[in-house]
Image 1 (cartoon, one colour):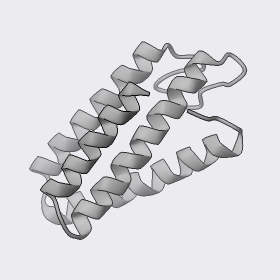
Image 2 (cartoon, rainbow, N blue to C red; image 1 turned 180 degrees about the horizontal axis):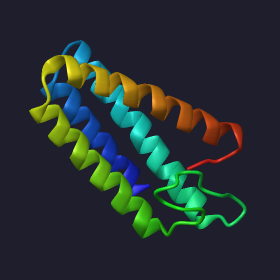
Image 3 (cartoon, rainbow, N blue to C red; image 1 turned 120 degrees about the vertical axis):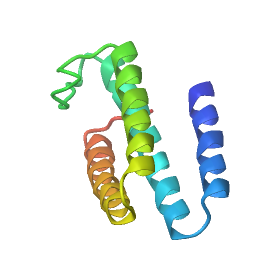
Image 4 (tube, helix red, strand yellow; image 1 turned 45 degrees about the vertical axis):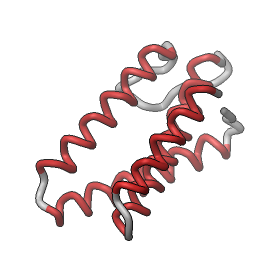
Length: 113
């Protein structure tokens, strides 16, 4: 729960730093990634679930889940810094779509956080 609250504070800071549509999309993406992260940690702790992400493997540890999401967040921030604007927009919208699908599928199979 403390991790979730800390991440929500970071999301709020993102929204304040980037007002407008880009800020709203980044905030939505951050909330989806946080939800997926917490759901994936639940999958890692509960042997009745199998993780479908081929990078993490069928039954990852919570440590490898944390490393994966932290590295992904860092890569996203780097990409948002170095890519031209039209590529940044495309990447953000692609990730919004994929995270929405992942979170929705987790909810459909009963994964909570």
